Length: 231
Image (cartoon, rainbow, N blue to C red; front, side, top):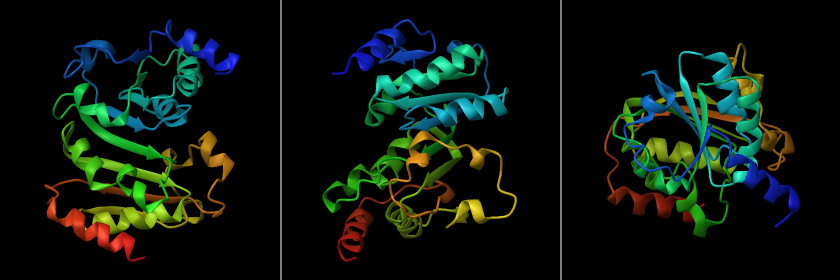
């Protein structure tokens, strides 16, 4: 492991806005933030640009960046501390473990910003918009919570649209090329480090906003698998 990573791992241990596998947090985030404001998660947050950016915009909401990579979290956590953003925190855990740290209905909104698209078919279940993860989000979000996906991967974008259609979820916004839409929201104009890398080389940023407002039948997972493998 590089020296810089080791330094950052050590640094976040002393950051009051970084929690690593904290005990007793289910249903208790209002005590951490010292308010009852709605909570938004940024999943696979990387350097936390969205958690920090949204925290700057919305002082009456709380934001938690979630990632397992402590050296990445360091950047966003340090920025939040330097700017005095008391409504921004970071949680260092695997995303699969979310229900262990949030109570039912504790989360109001989720942003998934430039996640690994997991392009290999064998890794489709690792995509953060796979129904496996959507069911997990349901365990901690309030009814009708908004889910946002922002990605430069056309594959993840199209896959997520298939999921939304197959499971009959409400699709509220669909931008194939977000930055060419007129009057996009300030929230959509936040840019992440991974966005700047343009890994997909698509020259487009895709955006979907949807809700998980119903149970997702397990039997449809096999149909989804066939759809993906048949492409």
